[in-house]
Length: 267
Length: 90
Image 1: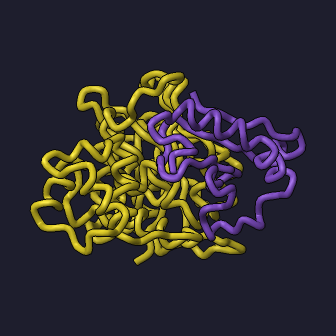
Image 2: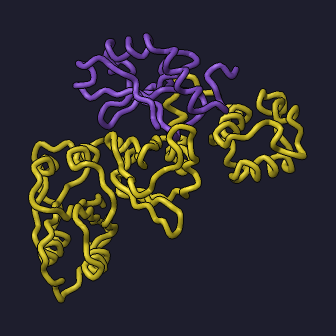
Image 3: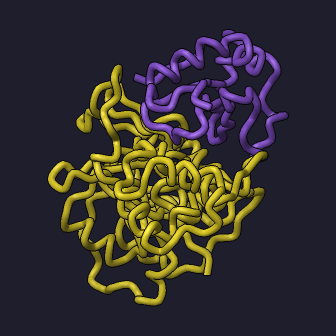
């Protein structure tokens, strides 16, 4: 079943009309829309029908939605949502993005309309208590990235989480003076993206040694950082001079690189 | 602080940007050409596009000329941001 997207926002926004949206003003309307068959769309390039949900302060209705309907509807809140209403919306919709720092609205609708929306971020929430960034992708899936992954850089310093923004049509995260590439995050934390990214390369060195080298460099490690494996041995593995590293070697490599040994080759 | 390559005004107005950000995939060193929801990675070692898709043909000549003309500056910026993996590491 195709997913449907609902947007909770401050009035009918012109760009969203292009998404073939239906505007809704209350929780009752939201329930009705969830219960409806997807609206017939005209001249749309979208994969999925879209519905907008306008936020009027109306009490949730008494009748709960049919559980089967919940499975195919998602909601993006453009305005802050009070906790009681959020609980209600989470009951109604399969997934809810609420209280997130979102892309500029003009960029947001274009991302939602993009064929590669899964590879773009629409918003995020820095969770300072847990030192993690929750990120939402254009297909509404989420991912969690530890703050520590964003190492301070000489000129940019450390990320300023109070100034978190998603920009460049979901391709860049900005934290004050610090910017992170969306593709770097996806490559690190999404094995599917990593696999697809490798198929897009003009010149892909798919050898284990090349993957080890890429991952080692990404981690900021030297060939001498894998004791008790010698730097010379690591160099030989990276050059492809070792047919298939022993299990004990793989375990050490994986442990130092922070990945499961069998994942090294995917980088 | 990210580095953004200066581009001709006309190219900028079309939404093109060329950036090296503070957190990138490190290998190989590259600059990213961005326009709206799409991105093209430019390998600073080989001076070629890294990815088949999106098609490199979509990048206008004027933007690519700027990247080529300012190659040395892009390399300098990359090396300053990522001294642990400089462009001339091979």
